[in-house]
Image (cartoon, rainbow, N blue to C red):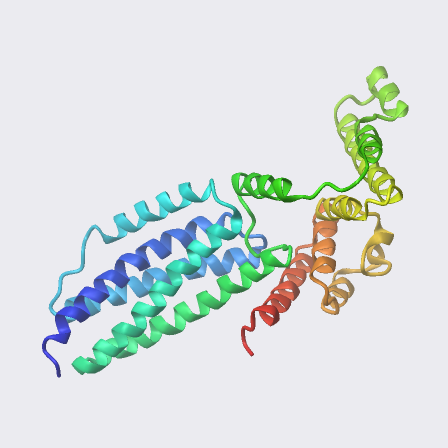
Length: 321
């Protein structure tokens, strides 16, 4: 046993414990961003497993003659809170990269702890390090998958916060090239702004002023977007028309016959799940998820679509190969 290794081992365990406390709090804040109940359960379980790992690390420190820091969990909560606030001004992918950096640091330190424990002849700590390596390697793969889902256009397992969505939209707007005619722009904007006479008459009469008005306004908006897509495509601005189509798909307002699955509205849950599993294009999966969430919102179908997209993302990222 190398005596001088033990103090270094204790120091590294303290560092891992502090990072683990931050990881726990991050996992708990991510629960509210889960897209599906399955992801929500997974994140909740991850937070609980993090607490169990923190307890095991604290025991290892005590067994080595060290003293676990009492303020560790508090510092972890503070660090996670600061991280969450900073993320509000970041695009979604940058927030995920921050989570990934945290997990990579935990993984690398766990491997270092294993080497130190091996040199010190501390087999209990070696086994603990193996446990940490397994857990953090799995989380690195999961976050890499979520990032790949985001890169493929989503839907990612985690939802953006409102601030992250606004930031991302601003960045995309700044980078969108405009290459179509002024006449096409005017026609598209006029189409999107114009309210059909039927809507004006309906609201003028005050018929069903609440729900009917809201639903009619939504229908008018959706119809305007569809017409705007047609106008821009007729103007030869296929890129802009594609962007409008993507916006319609993301909002779940495509017509049923525009979906990548034939006769989708007639499928029950089992049939829809089976059809989703056959999709290979991420944009098709995304379209189905948005349509499903905007209409029947069957969680079994949404979860199946999310799982399918995760599988595609893992193939792209080379996970599990």
